[in-house]
Length: 578
Figure (cartoon, rainbow, N blue to C red):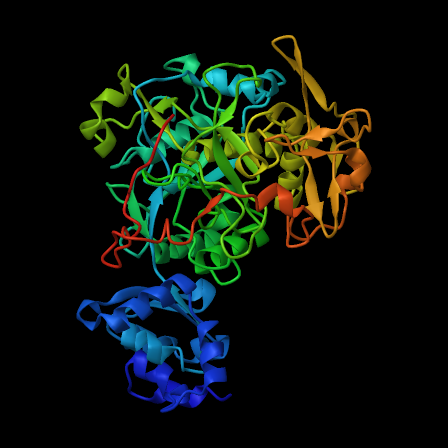
């Protein structure tokens, strides 16, 4: 093999990579090809630094190389100072200057170079609170629980800041494993630690038992966890360490029986999902049968720009995951007054222009579990509700509601795979009147209908084994499953919505008449030969999205706040609550 001889050379890894493809003169056509090998945001930064060399400090990067090269040079990588490995995606990590990165692009063993951005959790504080029962009621989770579902036997991998030993989580009984990746290596620890306080709050929404106060019980009160710490006591971590944690999860998923991964965190999008190292890692989780639920981000506005479109975070921008934006329920069960939050990230996705988010879920002023002694507890005492709870807002919390719903679905039917789970969530979602389609996605997560439909599906025989109603009652009003899914050049809808007398209204006055769509009933929708749902073939008209006055993310998100240094990348900025 052409790369085997390089493994024996006593060179640094950088020299090893550069030797095969270093060219003294790069022609214009080759220069264009090289631009395709680098994140566009990173290239913008390099262009700036080349004009301002006094600022040419080392940038944390992830270097994806050809598989053969990686396989034959692992030992050289381990001996190279400053280089780390990401075996899951055949990549290395390093801190390189702009000039070094420019040279690196010329190597014929390098496939792609991007930043190693900081990840951060997507929640913030507020001083008003709603009990979880309101949110659980509005999505139908309380109704599902009355049928006997509790998430028992389902395991969620929580990628976050940890899970504190709150009495409503009983971590020594319900946390199967606790591991810390903030140092870049797996450090096993006793369950019950959360230095920041975010993971405990998110875990409480997913699965608090409600023993201390039934008003703050989670969606799936008997679900179990694998506690995977990837952010530090300030709520910040690195993408490369998150990828290492994902690799460990894949290696241990079967023994720990992990079915769901909750990512209430991420980083702003800097490239197509097809090139994104974090997206590639998460896609492998989905391929291994793990449902990945991801918060869409809180990049919906800044002080200068009150409404930003196209800033769905990574890895929520990947089509294989379930991306969730936060909804403001205004503290009521009714759906008539539900609105989009001002801060939640909106679609479509950066670079790829895909339909996102997939769903919306309650995310504004949500009260859940407090991790005593955590950074949030010490520095934000105004957030506390009594001695055991606190109130936060953000897309982090919306993802938790969906993960809890998925736990109920998998309890009712363990044979569901990630694609079927996502499809059911999309089909059963509740269309909301006010939010734009790129704010609510398919609509509000509908735990009541989703669990009924999940239970009705006979996966082995590809049929429905029982009736699954598409309507239920909330406060004497009918709640319809009104979601959809796109596949190839068609849009699928549940049967009651496919009624020519009842056209679909999908946010901001956009009307989808039944005559304009190829329609499916429950059966054909569920058992379509699906690849990735909501893929490139989505059909939508220009007037829905590309209207005047929309502010896009280019030049807004990626502006003065970017700091390419140790871990403080995409600094906190301003995270809002309504």
